[in-house]
Structures are given as structure tokens and as C-alpha cells.
Length: 345
Ligand code: NAD
Image (cartoon, rainbow, N blue to C red; front, side, top):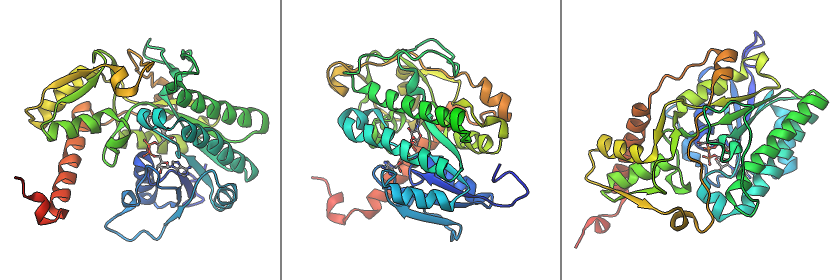
């Protein structure tokens, strides 16, 4: 496969490459000598995520949308491998803008997959643990049931859109021989993750550093597993170099399970914050009818068997990095603020 053969460096098209996970993947691909084209509309991504101290002649950024068929076709033509990460992401964004999310996540993926087929390019598609819906058994294997609520509950639109993407990729693989890899990502955390779209750790960290109450939705007894973005990117890179991964759907995530209530306590402790925890009913956070799952733990046996992957970062590393980044950001904001804004009455 490209990037792993004696053919030399490959050219990767990374859609959503200016986003959180995408930009870390771009760093990893460039670091090993590959060329990268990023297609991103900067809706939730930031160009600054691709800033680096060094010049990057092997990186090309294209400001555009995966909904633009001509642009996608041309860029897929120019690359060897497609990594499709562009999506409307984050529970808050999806609940607030369901139509835009659906269009990006279904139509956008269809356009990218069709272009990959036209040009016979290997494509890795980012799916999500959201596809398991309310299945709270665990650890969840890739063949676990999807248990989702009514289509009237907007949260399940994202789950369904990602499921449609997977089905489309699988059909192209089975019926037309398109080399596809479906990566089902569980909660991923690290530098450059925006707090604006409902991601829990960036939000809790910023609240702790500001000395505000940490808002925990529901009872806080619900559990999640948070993977460090470096481990997730290592898994993506490993899958892209593994011929046996073609045609497979693969979970990527941490197996270190923690309740959100306990997570909030750990954030307070790690940040040395005087904050307390405030429980907020789901209806207040996301509106009436919001549904959540009690537990979400991945079985990563397939990923390990295919690639030998093992995570290198524990939850405490994830939190330490998130806190360090939020502190650096706050310091930069303070330095950039005009003097008048710093005077408090
Ligand atoms: P992100 O919001 O940082 O990245 C998404 C990127 O896609 C952004 O840069 C955004 O500007 C771009 N984008 C959105 N719509 C676009 C469009 N129409 N055309 C071009 N670019 C567009 O989020 P992320 O966390 O880096 O997510 C990357 C992928 O991983 C997504 O497919 C997401 O569903 C998946 N995923 C992420 C997580 C997680 O915990 N972060 C979990 C499961 C799945």
C-alpha cells in the first residue's frame, strides 16, 4: 500500500485536515516524508492547526468543501490515498444544526467515496462510536448491535449518517472492489480540540481553569473512554500501512473507562482548581428529548491483531496535555488583549 511500500512517499488527500484529528494526522504523514493535500472548509477546523515552525513544502492546503464535486474529483485524482475525516462533528453542533450536519456527513462522504472509486484510490473513512447508539454493553466489538432511538431525536442523525457512510463504503468494497478501511473512532482528546462543540474534556478543563463550576450532564454516572490523539493517529497510520485492513471496520479508542463525574473530579485535581461540580439535567444542556448512553467502551482486539497497536498514553496524560494547552491559550489571549481590557473594576 502507498506509504508503506518501496515505491517511496505517497500523496495523501486528507479531508478535514485542518481539524483536530486531521491536523495531527497531517503532522505524522509529513514527518515520515509523505506529501499531503488538505481539503477543509475551516468550519470547525483552523488554518493555525497546520502551522509549524518549519516550512512544509510537502503540504498543500485547499480551502473548499467536500460538497464541491469538481474540487473533490480533481484532488482525489492528484493523490494516492484518501483519508476522509471532514464531517460536522460534536453533539452540540449536530443538535443545533442537524440539516447542515446531515448534508455534510452523508452527501459529502458519498462525493468523496465516489471520487475514490472513479480514480481507484484507497480510502480510509472516519466513522464514530456514535454508530453503536445506546448499546451500553461493553466492550463493544465491531459487530455489536446498533441500538438507536427515534429518528425524531436529532442526536441519532449523526449516528445514522455515519452508518450510511459505512454502508456505502462497504458496498463499494464488496460490489466494486474499492479498497476501503472504516475507522470507528471513540472519544479522542488532545491539543487543538475545540471546546466549542460540546467535547467534554476541553469544556471541563476550561471551566476548571476559570474557577467556574464544572458542568456534568445527567447524573455523571455515565462512563466513557478517552484516547490521546497521538494514539489515535498512530492507529490510523498503522491501518493505512496494513494491507489486511482493507475491507475491514476497525474500532480505535482507549479502554480506560471512567465516569464523567469522576472525570470532573480528576480535572479539578489535575488543574489545582477551586471549582466544584454542578450536575445539569440533559434537557437543560441539549433541549428536551436528548438521549445518552450509560457506557461506551471499545473492544480494540481487531486493531491490535491487525497492526500490533497499543496505546502509549493514559488518561492522566490526556488531562495533563489538555490542561497545558488551555493554560497556554489563556496566556496567549491575555498577552494579546489590549491593556484596557485587562483592567478590572
Ligand atoms: P473537527 O471538527 O476538528 O474536524 C472536522 C474537520 O472537517 C474540520 O476541520 C472542519 O472544518 C472540516 N469540515 C467540516 N465540514 C466540511 C466540508 N463540508 N468540507 C471540508 N471540510 C469540512 O473534528 P475531529 O474531532 O477532528 O473529527 C475528525 C473525524 O473524526 C470526523 O469524521 C469525526 O466524525 C470523527 N470522529 C471524531 C471523534 C472525536 O472524539 N474527536 C470521535 C469519533 C469520530
